[in-house]
Length: 212
Image (cartoon, rainbow, N blue to C red; front, side):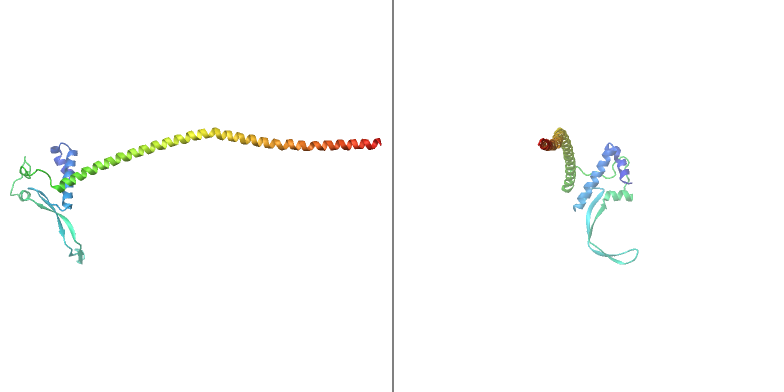
């Protein structure tokens, strides 16, 4: 039986597949966190989970037979409870319409161990923090988008206002260039005028010489 089959097996008792999956995940997560922290998780009639430290040692490679040094490590260990052992060995019959592992006596379920309670509390707090962070990030993104739109509108309006001014500046420049082109023509005409007077003087001098 794998995890999915385990969820299906308890789905009817838990009120649905999703509720069963959440329950299995919560139980396994609490057990793992407690064992990693060094606590012993014991379920009466079922068994206990605990962390075991293994010192550094020498072992042999099964393929080559070579001696290999193994570093110090910690491993999880499960010890089956007496009720579980009796059911597996057949000394006790498996009940048909009852829970295989006997429930804990009254008063023993006053509350979970401190480590398990802390683990569950940390998990819930982490979920809340993640949700709040996502909402804050979404608000910041929306605000940034609105700011970009506002900036784009202001830039467009400024560009529109600048266009008439640019047109006026271009028109003024064109007018100045036209005036500059016309001005030298008038001066040239004024300079040519004395040439006509000198011709008239020469004509008058010729007439005077002839009369003499």
